[in-house]
Length: 84
Image 1: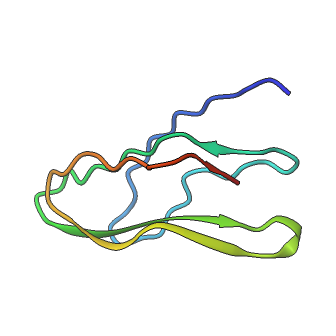
Image 2: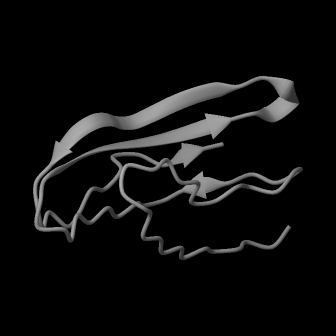
Image 3: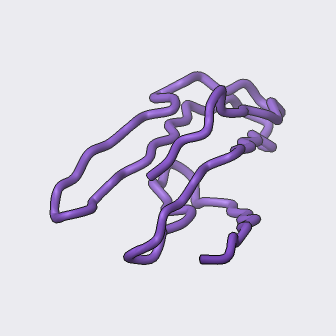
């Protein structure tokens, strides 16, 4: 299978859980990097998670959970690649 690269940008509604990407069935996704920006003038709490629902099971991995995010903070990067 050929490699595909995805660049996704999203501005979610306030205090709303939002799906950034869903890997199609019979495919494998690798998260190489993730950038989170709080461009608001107020601090916010953020959570970033990956949910695996293969084979009818559901498991969740949090990259960060309810982390205080200061105003105008621009970058969060993952320390390792995650395969899902």
